[in-house]
Length: 115
Figure 1 (tube, helix red, strand yellow):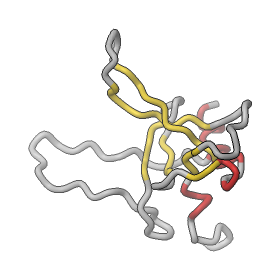
Figure 2 (figure 1 turned 90 degrees about the vertical axis):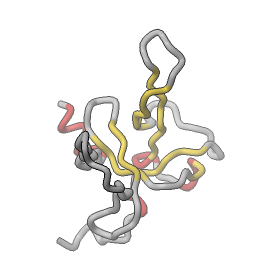
Figure 3 (figure 1 turned 120 degrees about the horizontal axis):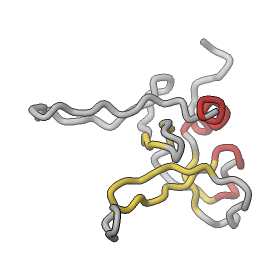
């Protein structure tokens, strides 16, 4: 079921590679394989990964199927933020002026009809 949901929402990005304990090389920010634009990769709340745009936009400029929000994940019994998780906005629509994070596939210049 999670795979079907991920396919429907576009959460099909590969996870970020784990650097080795002795790896001292710089980690470059990820880019889109299709258009080369920088993206932000985040885990979803159902253990898949999604490519998000690098800037937030008002909800009125983003179609409902591309709206995501980043939620903080806290350490157990603490107020320390340990991770961010991408959550797709469904059910209650945000205010038109409210900022949301669009999925990168909304902004990707690669034509979906091309291979």
